[in-house]
Image 1 (cartoon, helix red, strand yellow):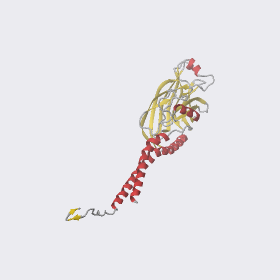
Image 2 (cartoon, helix red, strand yellow):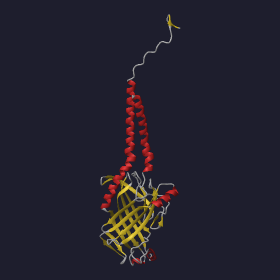
Image 3 (tube, one colour):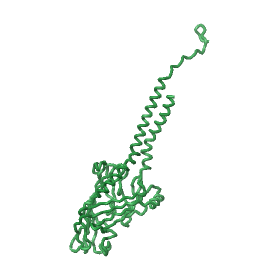
Length: 333
């Protein structure tokens, strides 16, 4: 009975030891993915801020500017792109809506971001765009990959329609979470005018005809929880200017917007709580279950060997063999 039990334990030991790497290296890459129906809203604020009054074309200091970022998963579009590419694809339709202190629109820029649900790599299909302009993204946007590494990444900047390195600056503690801190600085760059302007009669075409161009610079900061790859906080030191042309009169440049943009406190708390729960699901596949099954397999193997050793020690000694030949005068017949 002991030997039979040891064989059963040995079989379970092999099973659990083999299951551990399968969970980590086979199941996890297939099961960990962004759902196609994701919906999120975040509110960021700059208090105070400098904002251009398009009526007088003069900048003024205002108590607050709000930026509402809405992200909505487009399931039909994701299914269509996924069928065409043979991949698990997520399509995010996003909107960055900037409002002044009176709640009126300052600018709004829609985007479509198409990416692989598992790796977050861009997928160049499904009409990816920024403010209606077709783009071909290089690198990540909005979210880092699962199991984020301590290294620089390529991050897409929607204003310039280009990608640039976002630099890993170290590990920090943020609201009880270990996070990776990243920074990206975009130098002053000429960028397109928003297609929707805040004042009737002022359009991108009239601004261009006046010989005026829009310039932009920002320092972008993210605190990223590395297990899920989700930013739990984000800030920007953001600056925009109009330069040149007859629209500005005798001035070379005028500030359109300037401010230190920070995520609102209630959205930080909500994001941290959500990420804390989601990281447990990722850790279940990458650490808890694989290591648990490996330890269980080793324990079962040790128990099987112990039972086998006891079974061998408990066997009675073998009886001496009976003679098979007759001896006559000391000789065998």
